[in-house]
Length: 313
Image (cartoon, rainbow, N blue to C red; front, side, top):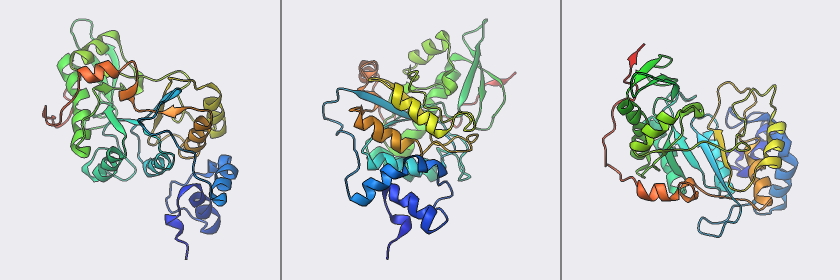
């Protein structure tokens, strides 16, 4: 007898919806119908999935897909799609609230993160408490910050340069603890919000900032009523170009029609068919030399309990 919940690939989503009339996961995406005809055709024909080139193979049209943490509700589905197409990505991690009731870098998530490390993905900091830069402090070397996670969620605080370094380092330490794999000496500021002073401070403590390309903003955090999945997919396939850094999330609370896997799978298939290949950021020409220079070693530093150590203002 066919085990629907173990059926791999796109066919699983059809069986869940049409045959079972309920999803094996509550996060089944109705908008998967956008690509159902293609995916179902491949599944029924027994043809192999469109897959990325091996990591060591020549890659003339590289792309760098990155995921920031989020509510993690679609994380298992994203992992499944990435594995089916042999795509390797870079995860920027923060300890954010998750739909499971435990935060995204809680030890309960260790098996999921460790499996991603074993599959060849890379990891970098997104600040442990997802701390937003608001402003530089003109009379000091510090910053006005606001975490959206952790014990000081929503509180505006003043961070010294040392405290911001700790903010970046703690997320790297946490993912290293969970994966037993050194994180990249890279970080992404929440919301991409930075200043020249913030970037200088982060570089001084060993972390280079990574944003995203204009066409690489995949739009999964935009309202689905105004930016439906079909529109986001078409825009990405039409405008992404060689060398772009792409950015999405492991779940966005506010988006009603989830972006993944409805857009993710046809996006990967479409880009691979256009001759693109995916690489992790340790292979990006802008960051390769920095990563070699700043190579991290497990256990080199001890993480603090929380990065939100600023004084409330």
